Length: 246
Image (cartoon, rainbow, N blue to C red; front, top):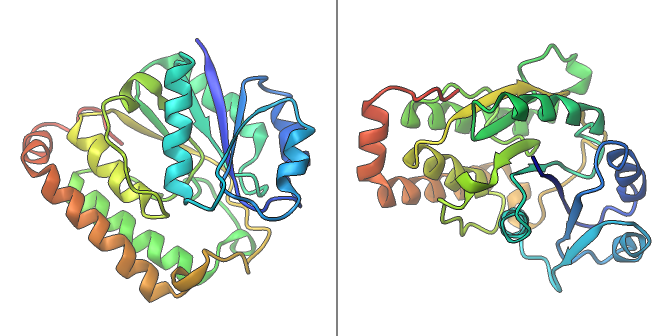
């Protein structure tokens, strides 16, 4: 079983060296997707024993995910685990994902920050929690899922399952396209608890997406468009059993 750890980064000079040092305790198969960083991140990555994909300009979180899946497929990995590089995802949780992969009963093992008991001090800003709750509820009701966290980036993906998807969303709305296509392709989804850590409450999405209403208005059309594209397959999938989905 070959497992790739894929880490999207953008201007993470504050964290990248420490995070990669911790991840290397658990794996030597590490891919960093540098999404056009303009700080010292590229220089710091050059000093690390990891593979790097570098975007000349910022192309978006979704594009970094697509690149990770393509790399994993090209180099014949069986699974890819994605995690953030801002210390919100703990490398100490990687063995839990390894164990879940070994069970071989899912195509997507999705981290949830809301399955474990976290103190209010650890909670993300209120607007982020609210949008997560709104979108997660909509995804669940529409796709017959039982997710508790629709936006967590700490996930394990079966590479052969990802080859069935046609993921094109480049930005932060990527999860909306991803969930629709996952259900349309009858992928089995499990959730596992991960720690909820927010070191920087002022961390921004960038541009107009910093406004919560505009962010929500950006997410919903992506979801609705994808529902239309896969309407026939979704009708068949959601009419049957949940196929073991979370």
